[in-house]
Length: 253
Ligand code: GLP
Image (cartoon, rainbow, N blue to C red; front, side, top):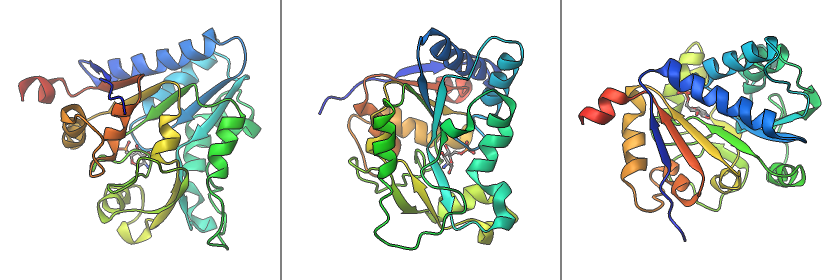
């Protein structure tokens, strides 16, 4: 198995880093003559990147008509009262409703209010859909404090495809800031697997703030995949760029 060194870009602040990521997305869309597939993340990390994309669309610097999007993950078991906590709502509200993307080309691994009736549900049909549509050209990732990418928690296998997974207590706690309290956070989600993510042609991982420092250090110091830190799967991809604003923490430690 080949191990690659990710490009590591340290920006002086989050604003500069957001500008870099949004410009990279815009460039990727604009240079493509035909359709283009983006893999998108939710969470607080990419919000300003998406705001920049909306601004760029409004000032006619980018057109989303040929763009399809594939989100990384979605909670399972949200009732209709909790629609606004779904990742579908987050994406519609932050980005999709504000640009000219065709909503039929915005995909999630599961509908936010789907009832999973059978234990034999084939979640990995999402991987097949992505492949059928030509694969993801550019994947945007955030990172959890415990090193998770999408909802691939510590212990996830490298060959994992899209599947239903349990969230760890740390992730439930970390994500409780979006809910009234931790009891409201769903216990399961459907997420792209590590293998799904590694199929993308290019990956940008964004890590902002001191809370992500340990995960980032684990990734930068690893020399092979370590199940305890799912982000280390990225070492197996030849085209990964890590973007961070952690200039003081990284340079002084
Ligand atoms: C969530 C999401 C991830 C996201 C991560 C970090 O649990 N499933 O896709 O990257 O946590 O979230 P944040 O950007 O809010 O720190």
